Image 1 (cartoon, rainbow, N blue to C red):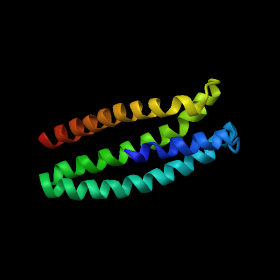
Image 2: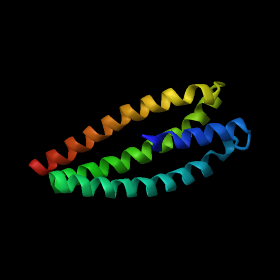
Image 3: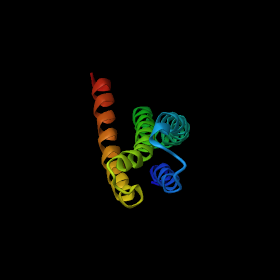
Image 4: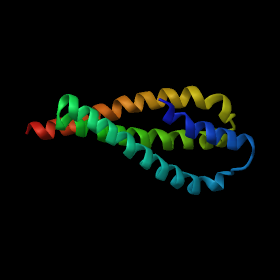
Length: 125
């Protein structure tokens, strides 16, 4: 899932060039949220169409919502982790990749199943 690696890589490279300081977090955070929403929306549309075509409307909605939430959360997490690691005096370049990948996978599964259980239980009642 390349979308979760790009923000981390960009933030890590920018830190290594010393172009960004912790005081820039808010500006970078909102820019990342805006880009992640656009990317998440486009991926959610594609997921909705494919899931609706193959499994029906309910599964399409679940797939689209899950895709949108996962993309936004993992993108923001990938952007914020280098800031956090730098604050903890750990080199962001060496620790970010495995941590972001593992956390994004875990969060993706948890988010998907949370949305599935919420929406499908609401539909069933």
